Length: 385
Image (cartoon, rainbow, N blue to C red; front, side, top):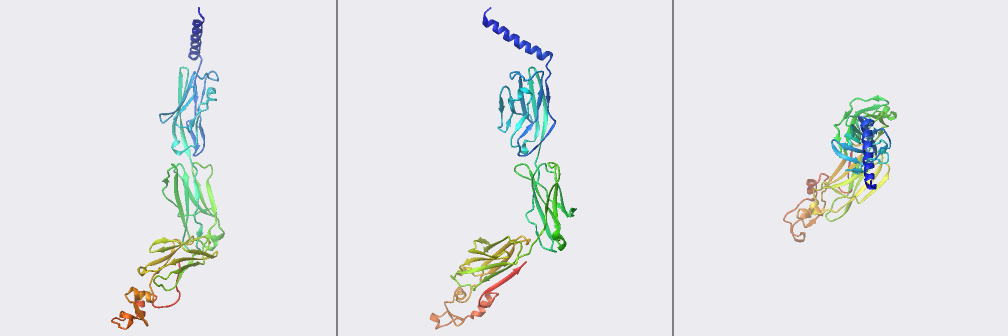
């Protein structure tokens, strides 16, 4: 008998022995939990193990397959093949019975039904695992400023949680506050949910030293998430616009003076006919006062134009706005009316003022055109909300 024939016979005999071994003694058992919980954004392992009669299992005698809702996502058959680089399997520990699936940077969309299938010799077993993704909520309280003895709304932004169910409570010194509202949650692009919650209070002097809290209970939390804070008692600002009489083509600064506010953070902006314009200078006087200036060049078309100073502050429920209406003054106003030669408070349409076919009283025109009349010097309007 030639050596080649002997080698072929021995090879067939070896496979036959292995086959008979599986038929008589081998028992394949695949083990995995029915439910597995994982945290969003983490690298996780979906557990699946198997037992056979002898370890390490011969790599040519077993295979592993992972499916997600019936769609093949990974196979191991003496090598790993995957449809997504986030999925992997440890080929070193696989022959020792570890068929667990690694998933990196887990997302909400990864949750669902997985199937782990192991083939060993002629045997095959599978088991299903439900992967549940959880994401804990995060709390942001954008404004803790209130006004004493005035109705105030405390608001919290709650983001990044999954699943959707959430319990929210507001407390004052550990006692639950009534009148809590929780808006319907929104689904964000990453699959998590977000919502806002409010509670309405009327802060008193006694509340100054009390602790307020928002407390969340969620499936992802082993203990409730609670954020404690104290109220900041704010003071609304005063506002006034200081300006000179308006003359055509004569540039002048408009000054918006804001003062008396607390806390220090404040925003001041300018609007001209409803459009935002840049302030020429912002000067902070102290922690509760500032001046914002805007350089304005009137033209004949500026008559009746509205210029506004807008103040936003935490003690305000809405922006504080002071609006000034441009009223052209003196010779500029007479030119606007077609008066080329103003003379002693009158308008003469004659040449050089020698012949006056029409005479207009300047003060009368100013009273008609401007609610401020013909007053001279600085003009000032003061507002406080």
